[in-house]
Image 1 (tube, chains in turn cyan, blue):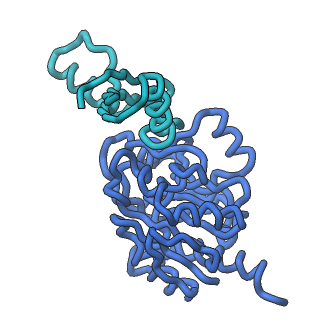
Image 2 (cartoon, helix red, strand yellow; image 1 turned 180 degrees about the vertical axis):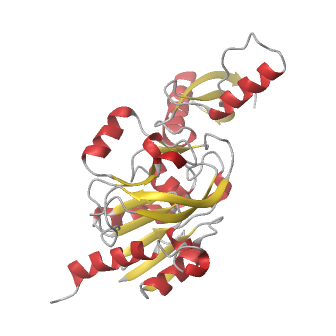
Image 3 (cartoon, rainbow over the protein chains, first blue to last red; image 1 turned 90 degrees about the vertical axis):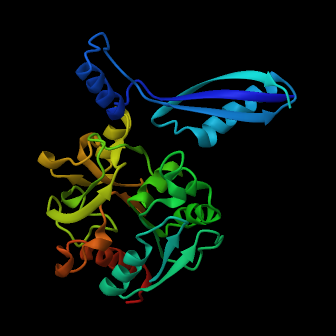
Length: 85
Length: 228
């Protein structure tokens, strides 16, 4: 089966995000006073072939651990969906 | 002492490093392409600055999987000296040879300037020619030099003397935890630093404080290799 993985990479809560902080300030300058915090991350779409969704889950977790994220400062979540060829 | 200066697509401080080595310690230094799989003949391996693989994904994340990095891992395990400068430091942390990670500068700006460093450990193979707590001038040029380690690791690094360089406290240019500018591994043969010692080897460059870093390495190597 063909699987699309939507991967969300964010900084760990303990890691300060200077970009997010700058954007928070910019939103405040635009009078969006309701905003209390912005955290900026990365979004990736990986298309892969797998035997099952469980199999895809294992593969995507592996690639996140090995390359797509740096576990020292980042964490990730992902969603999987079957797509046509 | 035989030295390799690694070259990745996107390295841009490789020639500077090579010239600095020739100028300072006149070692047998040569450029080595990233596809090389054997570094066993080298005593010192310099991983230079630049933007390897365009810094895609994260700085150093792709270079870490270059064939030559396996050889660097082997050389490190054999106790050879490894010096990672700027992007080289980022590569060594991504490869797990050094603890921590380098984040975007707190200011979000690329900072290119002379930085004042405190030699926090003057007893390493890379710093024995400095006096401990001496303040030296070495340039920085980076957008992602904001060093991060968690509190527990930082404490361990401090206790074991693995923090080798700090920015002087009133001038932390990037927001690094504890002002850390350079760290060494536990064994003491792998050093990573954001500042560029190879750009500070002559008064005409504005500083020659980087000279003694290379002299220290040569001295350490002689201490173990030259017959008395």
